[in-house]
Image (cartoon, rainbow, N blue to C red):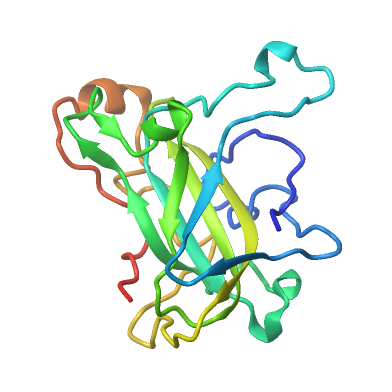
Length: 215
């Protein structure tokens, strides 16, 4: 169901070859698909309740460690029903959710990532009329308060159940990763000074990437 990756370290550049599903992000074998009915909520957990060899046990139950930055969710269809053979670097991804600065101002306002920092989940409602079938879902967190942006993409396999027929049409441009962002995008081209001082009191965060698909 969830793609595997060998570490929890971030990616830093929008040109990195593993930007789609993280370093080593590959399906489990055998492939497992999480079933979800169209119109239902899918929840992504970012708490760590497992042990990493050699790591202090103090970190065993920590929640997500960053509170400043945007969150994105993308999806991609799996032709033939096999997500394991999908070229994740191809222009297949459509954005279904984005959250940035929810309220307040830079830097002390409430960011989308704050809920995860407090131990919550990232919730998304699958459109009730979405076409049934197997999809990749890509959750992405981008911490923007550090000297270099920290990009955390993760992928999973789901199977949408329902009787709808809605998917993005030819008027929606799907993106590739890498390719969907540029390091020069205003929402990504930030230093520590930019975040804490340069944009102080701003009330808007410029979202990188394509627009959210509206079913």
